[in-house]
Image 1 (cartoon, rainbow, N blue to C red):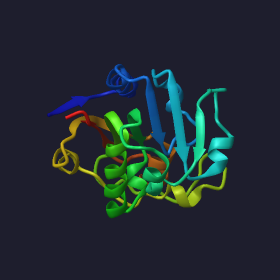
Image 2: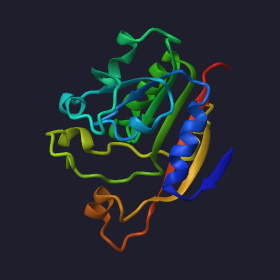
Image 3: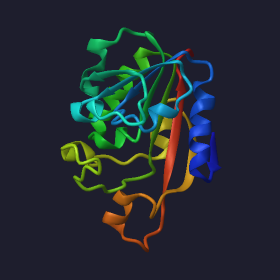
Length: 193
């Protein structure tokens, strides 16, 4: 199933709709918590490989912060131990083979859903840490994703048309101010099936 959605506001609305039946959420690659702060779950856990992001959480948000590598999540979390696992603007930072393994792990950890948000196709991103916290190597995009990648694995997909545009500093740095916007994909899988 593919549906077009247009604006950024709908992104958070859709995520919170998907989280509405969850009490716990594990956000992989949470960074400084900019998106996690808006999640509606009462219990939030953020995991990031770059410790300074976790140490500089913005907005005074309260959530459990863990400095850990996504590639080793199954060492830390038991199967079906959390309601929902999210990867928001994260999966594209891994080589595709590594990303498939991370998805396999989070699908085992999630009792209800896995939610992934990523640019559609390959969105080149430079090694620039816009937070100034030394995470340049974590910011590079290493893979691109299409609708079929997720649908073939049992995910539902929504396309956010022209989501990445000139409002995104990383987009402007690589593609320039006059470039055509890039779509984004929101994919989710029901792990109860």
